[in-house]
Length: 349
Image 1 (tube, rainbow, N blue to C red):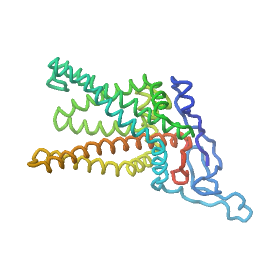
Image 2: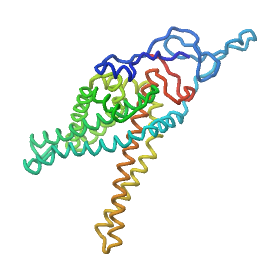
Image 3: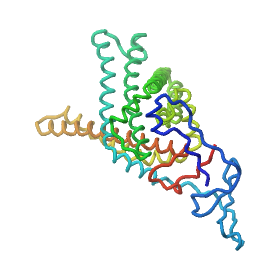
Image 4: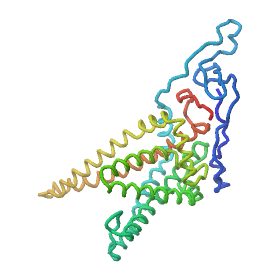
């Protein structure tokens, strides 16, 4: 079965050409018979635009039983893709620590802007009520947080690409590659900040604004699911990034949705459990009437906070690796440890 040629730039290319802007494009194929990875040994007919139902087993033409009609294989949840994501990430556990530290640095960067403005400048940061200066401070703080998180996410994606290419991935090398895309990541952080500010403002308009903000938020999340891999591999700016990411999602919506949900769900449950434990600890601490209750509440509160941060870091790292592997699949590059039989047929654009 034809696969898109691996024409996309690799992380090796990023290392030597950090300003690479060429978009990864899938190759087109002429009509004809190609190997079908969903049916070992068979070939399937490609009409130049789509796969057809016609398959045959080479060598059986003489018996007259070779060419048959067989439907395209139905998609099954890609357990191998999720398993490969777990295996590759836990071989690079430093990426989890990197995300954890990155979240702390991002929060510190945001506070470094907001606290002085609030404490000494008597500014009320926010999207309403604080005036123009309040909006500027809130936007600057959110932008700083977003940029730090984007650089860290870019580093994790870089590590995933390095692993996929059979190379070792260290936090230092991953951060170096992400810093090589700092201009694109900064532009994306600014775009994300503007969208976030718009959503906050819409939410204050009324029920219509809340509905509009929710719709825009869902649309933005879907359209940008491949944003970080696209930026890191292709070096695109925001408009091109959104267009490219949305195009990949349209062609591979099912595999992206099912793989993402099956990967994230258990970690969401664990994070929610941590919030419940932390909240219960906070109430216990507030209402404590003795030393035992105080200690119990404090332990529960700390455990809840630490657990939430840890589970959030693991979930974010897994999502970054999964998005990278899905991106590689979408552009026709091999995904390590994944049997293509378990993925839907790759249809050249």
